[in-house]
Image (tube, rainbow, N blue to C red; front, side, top):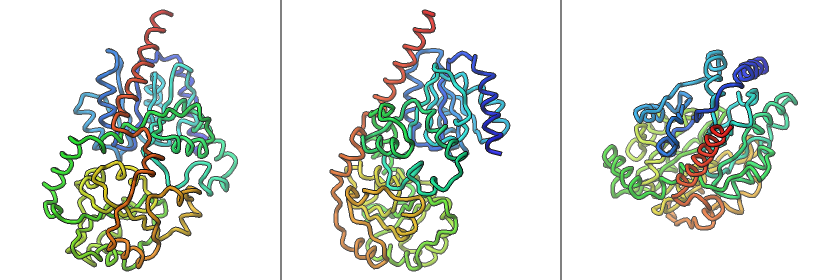
Length: 390
């Protein structure tokens, strides 16, 4: 079925190859680049339209962008997308992507269209792409299909040479495609106005967090829906009687929320109306595992400590895999048992993020949005000039 769908994408894109390249298309699965999209829209030459095609999970960000005046269209991989939205994409000068989009493997585009990967995470603890052990066990046709998607990207925006190397190894892409500009989404963590506004919003919704030690537990996405959190994890998380524990579970782990809250309702809180990014601004201790949230938290000047609680380390190392050298650069030693987790929480040991940030957040300096906007506005302007002269 996937092969048939990609052939349909290929056919429709071939039939629309002639379309004038006048638009910017942003493919959005994550709502963390709204400010970049707005600044790009304001900086582009007149008559250059931005169209945002978004997945359902990014609906809130799409609503914000629609209120700003941009055209937004929800999409999924279906017949409507292939026949009605591929022609829209074929009219793009630049296609920005914030994720892996399988349909790109069938897209036929001209050299006048640039496809840019603007990844949703600043660093990587877990493996993906060719580095994922499962990939080698996939069929040859699957492997070809994956690489066809990877090869479509003309440029990768990265915030460090380390992240560039991850893409080189994970996608088998050359270093020449890596653009060391920094991730626009990272600027907020160095923007005092955004930080202050976020803190005010958090305290308005959750005033009980003010003047308390806030422990945020934010484990990563897991494809395995049957994953079980260790029995007794709530007691371990609440070992400090003076702290409030805020839990942000991925939707695939939400089934555990009632169990965790039932075990200790006084100290454990859930705030679905607050984003993880907002909660980071009041967090004293972040507890995570393989999540990229660690790379965001480390940028905040108020960040105090981080604990990597990897209770399923052995199985996770097998699938999807963990970066081979992660122990050499992780800012604190991972803990695997509930006893170690309790001890780490009670120790209140502060984390030194300097070397970690030097490696992974090299160009995430608060000015990334400006650099990325300037690069692609320059590209569009130069492209417009060529079209007028031809």
